[in-house]
Length: 337
Image (cartoon, rainbow, N blue to C red; front, side, top):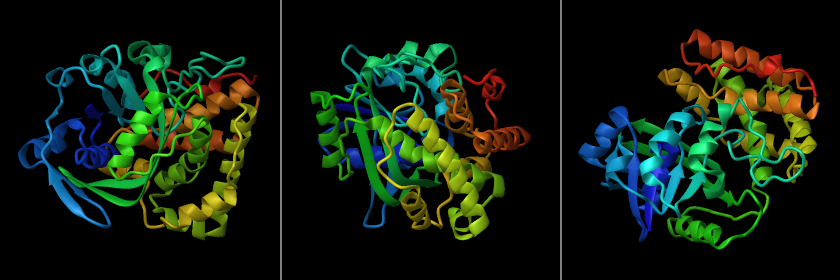
């Protein structure tokens, strides 16, 4: 099984390292100093239980790798338009794309059913360029609960959790879904299959739209945001709006907000990925996460005043840092449904 990780940073590097110890033939697509280190020294993976190094084929030119059986797509949402085009040499007639982005995924309304079936969110996939290039029919959705970081070029550390929930957009428990679950499980990852992958997306959105932006705006780790009553109340208010939008789209929430807050408390020392990006001078994930919920609020007629405010502040923070990828679309300017 040819298994390529496209976007072998913190999460992708961890996945690639773990899967490399199975019978799969793993390759990595990376860039910059990280790629240079991968080619020179291999990839070192550090977990709470072990540390190991492997030397995979690594490149910034997917054409060198050829058609793959599986592409684990872990590039950031704002980089997907360019990534989709670059991925063409990896994709054959039967290639499976495991889409593992934070935020609302580009395939969200594929096989969704209902009034919005086939709809494209402009904050996520302007002009449907990603879906048109990759093909949503290839996609298996993946929602990750795993804290990882690039310690230095060529070295990734798993801090805790390794849950990679996967599901088909149409809700079927297909043979190919089971095949991916077997690969990830063999690698030592928790890979539950679900007929309701969008529910997993929305539960993660609770934190992605609340405490993650708050962390970037305050330059804070997660701890103070859940330990200080005033900040926790703000985060909970945002989470309530997120849930209202999700429920308006027919998504059931099987977890309580209070439980999610307690889960955040357990990783209080973690820096969110958007804060890591800000500190490292990398483009920040703004539109595909917070902006997408603003757009969905307008589509569903759900008022999102706290999310609107958070999005406006976060977008400006990213602009001031020179880290906002302009998309030529403003969800705040949309009329209410």
